[in-house]
Image (cartoon, rainbow, N blue to C red):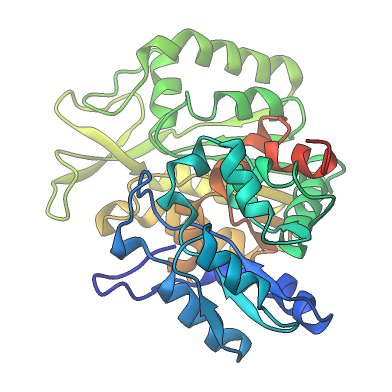
Length: 375
C-alpha cells in the first residue's frame, strides 16, 4: 500500500477491497481483530512502516474508531483483544515487525491464533506465501473461512480460465520471461490468443533471429521461447508479438526515441514500448475478445515518453464489452492512470498470487483454509 513522504496513504484500494468482509463481521456482532503488514521491515520495528495510518483510514471508511495495538502479540495485545466488545475493531501492528511471520514460526502463529476464535483470510495478495498469518494461524484455529474479497478473486479467475466466454485473450507483459514462464506454459493451450509485450517480448524477438540492441533480454531462455512459439503454432493459439517498437538511447524523460521495425533495432538503442503498428494489432485482438486476462505492462510506462502502448491498450480494454480481469500491481497502476478502473470487470489485489493461479498452482493460503484446525 503506497504512502507518501509524510506516511499518508496515497491509494487505499486494498483497504476498500476488504470492507465488505469487515462490515459483514461487525454487522453480525463480531469483535474484530484485523491483522496485516506494510512494506518489508525484515523483522525490525520501522516507524515509517507502522499500520497507524491504516487504522486512521479504516476508521474513516467504516465510521467507527479503530483501536491501534502497540504490537501484534504479547501481554498488552492479549489484554486489548480480551477486552474487545462486539462491534468494535482492533488493528494489530505490522506483522512483519516480527521475522517469525515470514518464517512461519509455529510459536508466533500460536500467539496470533490465541487472540481469536475464528480466522478469516481476506488477503489474496499474500495467499501465495507460506507465512504464519496465512498458513500457521488457520492450523491452530478450528473455525476458518474465506472473506468476500478472496471469494471474488477466485470467482472471477474461474470465470476467466475455467469456463470462459470465447475468444479468450491473455495479455502478458513485464520485464522477464522467467517470472512468467510457468504462466505462459499453463495458459497456452487454454487461450485463443496470447499477446506478449513488455521487455519479456525481447527474448521472443531474439528467438526469431532479430537483434534487439541494448534491450533487456534473457538469452538463456531463447530456446524455451522458440519452443513456446512452436507449441502455439501446433495448438492453433494466435500468438502476437511486437512487429515494431519504440526505442530509446536511455531510460529517461529526455531520452532520444524513434519507432523502428522489431527486426531493425539499432545496436545502441533499447526497446522501451510497443510501436504504433503493434498497438493497432493488439487493439484489434482486444476488440472482439469475450474474455480478457491482463498481467504486465507493454513497456516502461512509468516514464511518459514510453507510456503510450500501455495506456492505449488500457483504454482499449476499458472500452471492450469483454469480461476483463486485471492482475498485478503495475497493470493495476496503468489501468488507474488511464482512468479505466471503473470500466474493467475486476482488478485483482495480488500480483504474485494472481500469477501463481495463472501457473495452475495451488495457493498455500487456500490449502490452509481447506485443512483448517488440523495442526
